Length: 613
Image (cartoon, rainbow, N blue to C red):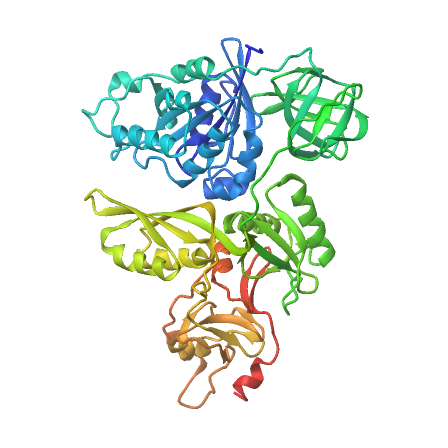
């Protein structure tokens, strides 16, 4: 037993305050100097994490409390990043489950909790945001207990300790806050700190069981790169002791794959990696010098190599083809535009993202990337475009499998929080997409919560329609729950056709004004278009070639400046996720560092369809 160490993962649904609580723990543990400038949500180190307000990459930090080192792992709350969660749970001996005091446990809470219970980890439950005006703490406590029972938790796991926090204020309570002043803590409750939380972690989370004198076993759970020392392997010393300079053996699938010397050994203090000469069993650390190490591999003793169980990850649910950008506007903004660049970048991503799969696509130089969901793919593409890559993306497709001679497809649980007056239209749309309602809760507050089991194929392209139907006030969360028999129905097809540019040039106000009646436009005056580029959505179900560059013929009665008086409807602007969901099978999303464009796979021949115009 290593009584001076505790390893704990913090899990929660998106936006339940997980990263804010870690911030408060870091500040109150004395990690930062009094005059040190620290960014808000310091654990969200990626730009995308800060912009989206979610955790994408699992990260670990270490704090000290009364002589005990507490290794904290901040894990993603979204099921699309489940690969991060699954490898993180191999590092820890316990889990802190954080739940919003108003929203209660939501789908991603369920996903990560199910993984934690399957690992047999003790759970410390924390109800956060206890100062919310709409808090309902007693009901949330009951919902958490129901969720544990629903997930077949063991009897000892049902006896979970319970704390109450307001993360931004850095307050933790062991007793349920009073209901007298709903939305505000009393002065006595608000003047506390996180000491009860630190003490609960030390008391409720067991210390690591590894023996520092045992056979060396180090489990690799993530990879990093340093320009000075090369590949860095992060993981946990399960048994034995790592020493700088020692010879170790790399074990892949239980078999030795070469020996090497540890050139660098890093421990964690706060958010920083610090050089150290020795790390004992139970601690989380990083090592350099072991070439070829991958997530799930074991680093062991050459004299007595003993492999640990590798990390298993659930299979991907959807796939998408990554193409080189071959449009007429290709190469103007990006630094990396060739098939070789694209392949190298995707192979690099596979090294540290265990939940992705890469294979050669069916169409020419395309590469097929399989993932848990559209958000995971969108984050990868957004990261690549910021690095200077240009590419084109095909439509997401669900991955079907054969089970006992029958074709099955992924099934998801969709939880919707919507206004009461939207119940009919939302339910109808989901039923049309193969959904079955399993639960409805209506507290009479003007909003209702619905639960649907829906094939993943039926949810592709649904989110945008859902936001339109709920006037932007609906909340949709989904989680993969299993497989269902393949439904022989095309409920994921877009109802409307596209308006397709029939010639290159710059969009004119005159052309836009006259084409607005045809449908909704996606371009502005002055935008550059090319033949085959999608410039709008047709009001009908067919594709329609259009001339977007037509200019007004000038006469004595009409002047060019009259265009300034035309009233144009603002165009629709797509985010990357919306564009991926929107396109049809014969379309692509063109992605550059500065632009997103929709286009047809076949760029030529549209002018012939229109005729001379």
